[in-house]
Amino acid sequence: MGSTPTAPTGLLLPDRHPVAVSGVPLPHRPRFTPLGGIVSVSPHADQRGHEALLSETFGSVDWLSSANDEFRFGKADEELKGITLSVPDDAFPASRAPVSWLDTPPTEGSLRSLRPENFDAPPATLRWTAPGGDLLLCAYDTPSAAPRELLRLRVARDLDLVFADGSYAGWILAHPAAHLAHPGGTPAEHEPPAELIRAMGVFFDLFVEPKIDHMQDGDPELLGEIDALLTGLAPLADDPGASVLRDRVAEFRESWFE
Image (cartoon, rainbow, N blue to C red; front, side, top):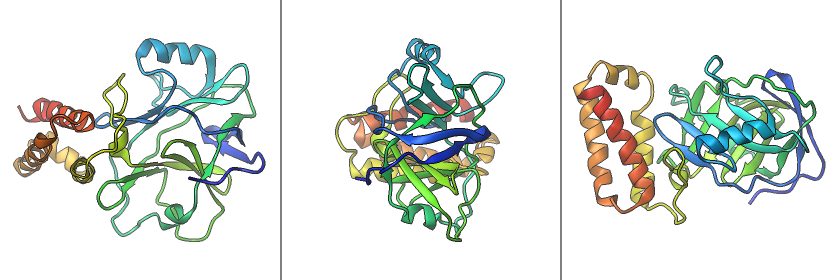
């Protein structure tokens, strides 16, 4: 577990929107939907519930005209109520592991908006996954190896927002296999089997640019890797998380290779 913040800390979300550390982490579990690449922490899972959340909150929103991550704050108390984050398709160079972020211990807490108005929040542009796939890190730029003032704020179970020198720099989801969920669904209650965690690592290594572009061109070698991933997931037919990953990969294969 992370430590507890001793006092509010002035920070900036994208669009220079001011926030402060406040309260306790969100009680909702993250939901990770692969191939579509969404991590959501919200009291609502379906579209109607999401629309209700938007009506009760302000902040950033993913409209058709602007691809934003969503940070939603209550109109009544200005406290963080929900987050939706997009997973980028581009990865850091393999040699640039984000050591400074990984070495920063998490601090438990939440956020309070200091300005009750909407703002833009472009998604992170790069991702990094730990060997084996048990940690997903997304950022706007490759994290610097130079010492910086870093805050790794744990706003929900296994989900940290990272601020560098007071400005939002990206986020970290630990144990993504534990949070797999279909759109509108919920993650499994039990810990994921080791085979699913390994398959998650294969998935992250496979579905990344420029491989995704090559898949669109019908690359037969990558088709073989997709089929190998599906074969490896077959023995986990009764595991809900494995079913999410298998179904999403199978849908992708059918759309692009058949």
